[in-house]
Image: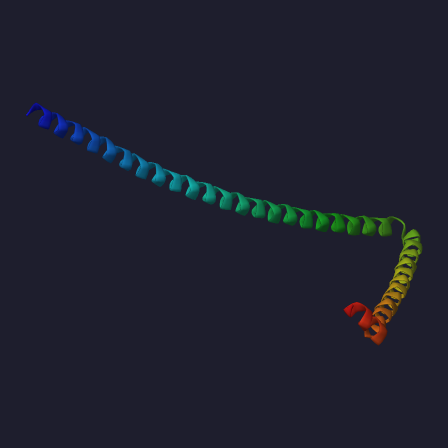
Length: 134
């Protein structure tokens, strides 16, 4: 009888230990999933914070640019009030400089269009099509 009792006690102890191990494994799996979910949420929050920081810094830069432009305008008005003769001279120089830039940009655009046309002509040439297909 004692051997049957011993076998029953040992079986019960073994089953209890096995049951505890299964439960512990399930708890660990559950906790691992919680950690993964937490890490994912943290990653998403960091990305959102980075985007918000970029937006805020961009807005600050835009506002700074506007402040600098307004400051330049105010300085120009003050200079005009203090020295109206100098203002006219500088205005005409700036206007001429702007016209020169427009002419230069037009030359660049014309050369770019010529280059695009030459390239498209080369691509439409039958000799080049066969060379490209090979």
